[in-house]
Length: 307
Image 1 (tube, rainbow, N blue to C red):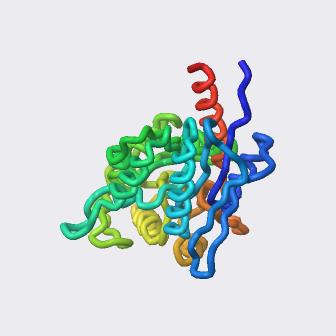
Image 2 (image 1 turned 60 degrees about the horizontal axis):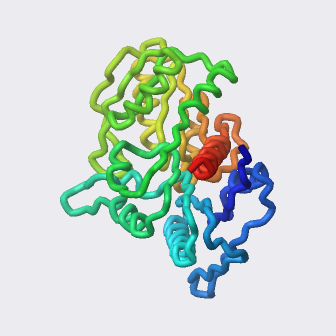
Image 3 (image 1 turned 45 degrees about the vertical axis):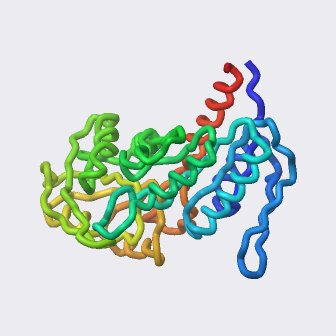
């Protein structure tokens, strides 16, 4: 069966793997022009008519977060009025996904507002990567496909002969992610009971499992200030582990916090390219997620052709 070349545009021109993804599909031009007025208002122009076609919008919601959100909404609004036959959103990093619950009695559930806005446009599907928790899905009426980085981590561990004794979930919320990885690698799961009394600060209550003289692999979705992962690492070394490698999907690295990693006891940090990061550091390595998204795009094209 013939698989047609997908119609793809991208609003976030900064994310490097978007460009390599387009090359794989032999798409040589982005048919979307994005300019700004002097006051930073967006001026968006489409260079091709996508009426009655299925279209994939590639747009990350990493920093500058609010620029990228407004950018995406303007793009969707125009296309839904054309109309486009089926509209797919590919959002590798989904900002506000951490705010899937009330942090206090006086705080909003911020992802609920973002989901309500996107639900209004009734797009065909939203495709993202490694959501912060299972609560994320509950706020969307739009069909969601949450790709998992587990297979990438397994392949990387095997390919690079990384010796691991145990998989560690750095908090209760990450148990499912860590458990899936532990099952793939046929390893024991250890859980750290970590909580946040206030934003960007943690308190470790207990360790569930034995880590003494073990080679540890920590898996998590986000690294922001790096305070949390370093606290967890120090706690593990206090409990006499051998060493630790860390796999993180979304490298936010606020205020150049990766320098903390370089000066920490972490043996190696492996991140994905869901957010741009230029690593010239031996301690930090990047694995690509583009093939996960390529396969998902192909899958949706096939499903449309078979319908």
